[in-house]
Length: 333
Image (cartoon, rainbow, N blue to C red; front, side, top):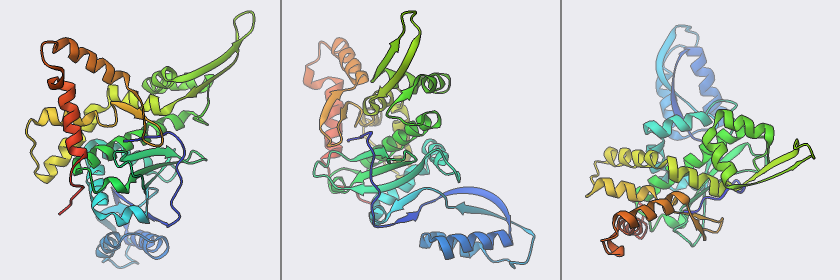
């Protein structure tokens, strides 16, 4: 899995809104207004159109409250190329419906979010590079792009983990952009705000960034700037603190499909490290191991010193990851 922190381009093939659920009480007239905006003017999926048409069974002049669950369609978009990958889209939709991920996704949904969110595809013959997330040049949209060439190799659960992984990247970007104007260089004032509001992001951004500052002879700071490496910062923070979220999402997905795993705890623990053992550049090439993985491996070597290295926990984890990556491709049948 490769997760670069550089900008990503929107595909030119067009965008279609994608959706999540919110509950509202609207008058019938308001329903008709929403219908006109979404279906007649905005365009949305056939499923969404059918849903709206089904609930619009009241007189448009009737001002009585209509009590329905209405799907509101805002801000989150999918490229045509993404929508054409129907099995992948179904997996994504299942994931964003899970409890933990739905809470994150909702933060991208208001009319004026800190970041918009867009789903797309890319093609890379290194199919182990299953996904990446980055911001556009204006830093107002996060792009989650998934590798089309991975889909004929990796298993469903790898794509589940990948999608959850990329959503966490987007959320870390979103939190950063709440307080930082340009993530390429963070001012001292912005960094202080990060410390006050998102201490973990502040810590990892500083730890894996390059800080430059000047002082006068009295020791007063004249200039201060932090140039973060967000690939390193994100992956090390996720490896240290977000693997439980990835495990919960994978378990929820398998539960929804009636899938049981032999040695389930070890299976999910192993896959939670996928994409978080090492950091990669934008070409998916190995950069370095994360500190969390190095610490984990070192502790295993101490605890399991009497066990042959090939049988130690971390190598069992790696074998599980390899088996799920070198698989038969995703399947929604």
